[in-house]
Every structure is written in structure tokens, then in C-alpha cells.
Image (cartoon, rainbow, N blue to C red; front, side, top):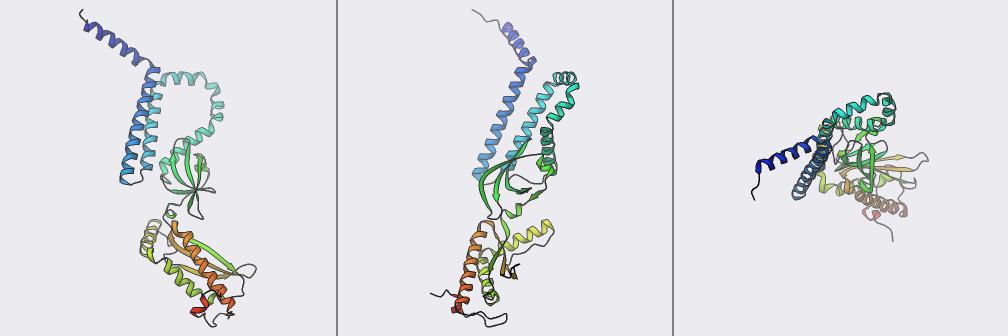
Length: 304
């Protein structure tokens, strides 16, 4: 039994022609093809990033948004005629449709605003209104943030989804320079029964000691920030100031330029040293006025 190849080819050509002319089939093919390419590219980039120990979330996010745009463009081109006919048929309801979908339209406009101005990148720490977090992903409708406690410089475990229109109506603060190093401020408040100037120099030495191992790196990083922002920032040396509160208590303000992951650790060490010195001075009765006798080395130790 012989096979009539020309006849088979003719039927196969007719079948392909029918598939090509069937917009529903083409829509499914374009969708699956684009999603397949996106999945393969994203997986490849992530695997290479893991093997090299690099953060490629920004590249992955851009790939996703680009291929989504390509898919949408192809589908709109495929159904352009039908969409035009449909649009003309509902011209009378155009205003109602715009009003009903204005939030979605604003979100899409917000996406183009973020894509054109680039106020942040994936992985940056940003503040939008009162919300602070690390940008993990953006798409046409929303931006995804991993919430960060800016006072402790750590993740809270919460994932925030912010509509892109909020990026237009709220001020965006890029806090990316705080992600690695930050000028950490904290106050220590006590009554005026002890003069803090008696041991403030010892506390300054303690602060410099705790910052000694990263002093060179902090100095270079602060210079990098100053060059990029063209402003003078505090640091990298620790600063300690003494003031009074509204009710007359002594307030010691400490500012240290340090790695964010060590800020709370150094704060606790300095508070411990301050309390040790303060209680030692109080128990020893060494409550001299400013310019009085300084604490002896033994006075800086707790009294048993």
C-alpha cells in the first residue's frame, strides 16, 4: 500500500492554515510559548545567581515584565480588529468603563512612572508614606515589599502589596544606603543625681572601641555616600552629646555609623557601659558638678 505524500502534505498544509487562521488557537500558542520562555529564562538566571552568590532579582523582575509586555502586545495585535469593533460598539459606555477601571488605569500609569524614573531597584529599601520595606518584585498593578523595622534594621516577616498608584500619590524615599550601613541614633535618659560629664569620655572610648573593627570600611562607605548624594553625613566616628529633657533629666544622645546588623548590638553594649558607670558614680557618692573630680578606674565598676 503506497502513501500519497503530495495528498498528505496538502492536508497537512490545510491543517496548519486552519490553525494559523484560528485566533483562539494562536492565542493559546502565544500564551504558552511566552510563559514557557519566561519560566526557562527566569530559572536559568536564578540558578546562575545562586551558583555565583549574586542578587539577580532586579534582572528577573525586568525579564518578567518585558515578556509580559511582549505577550500583551502580541495578543492585542492578534485581536486588534475585534477589539476595535468592540470598542466602537461600546462607545456610549466608555466613560462608565473608565470610571469603573480608573484604579487599574492609575496602577498601570504608576508602573510606567516607576519604569521611566527608576526611583528604586529590586532589593532596595524604600519608604512609601509610613511603610518601610525591601522591594522584592514589581509588576503592572503592584509593588511587593518585605516589611522592615527601620528602628531595628531587620525584617518583620510581613509581605506588603502596594498598588502602583500609591507610588504616584505618596513620597518615595530610597533608603538603600541604610541597608548596609546606617547612622544609628539612640538616647539614654537618667535623672540629674549624677553628672554624666564625669564619665562621658570613657563612654566615648567604649564607643570607638566597639566601632574599631569596621572603622576603615565605614569611612570608605561614608565617603561613597557623600560622593553620590553630594551631601555631608554624620560619621564614621561615634558622637556623644549631653542635653536635658523637658522635665530636667539628663539625656545622653549617641550616634554611631555602623553596619545595620550590628547597630542594636552596639547600642546595648553602650547602654550597659553607661548604666555601669552611672550607678558606680552614684553609689560612690561621686556626684561632682561639671569640671569636678573625674571618676577613678575603680569607680567605673559596679559596687557589690
